[in-house]
Image (cartoon, rainbow, N blue to C red):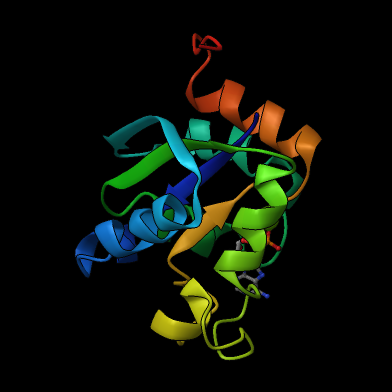
Amino acid sequence: MERTLVICKPDAVERGLVGEIIGRFERKGLRIAAAELRTLDRDVLARHYAEHVGKGFYDDLVAFMSRGPVLVAVVEGPGDAWSVVRQMMGATDPMKAAAGTIRGDFGTMVTENLVHGSDSAESARREVAVFFPGLRRE
Ligand code: DAT
Ligand code: MG
């Protein structure tokens, strides 16, 4: 079993789409290993989004990601769970994301694209440790 980090972003919580998003992962056959509703601050977002600090969109990204609660979850499954989650999320820009993906079905704005998923096995390990440092393997 491999683990990956998923965040249902503030727009997903505001729009009542958390159940829809998590339900898709569950129906696929992935399992929720940890989940918590949290409001993220600038410091944890700088650790999570370390590769984006200083980019043109970074301040808007932090403002958006901290404007309300998010559902942070660890999702696990056989093989590359991070890759399965990324396929189910769709492209970063919801207007380019394929129908049938979460972003393709529910989003219109790159700035409010509903869901985060780790982009590699290494990112998954790092991001799970940022949000759930004490999480043990069952
Ligand atoms: P992803 O979330 O698909 O992994 P990313 O890691 O490149 O995409 O970027 C993180 C988030 O930052 C993304 O979900 C939305 C925002 N973002 C990325 N590129 C952007 C851009 N050009 N303009 C505005 N927001 C952007
Ligand atoms: Mg990313």
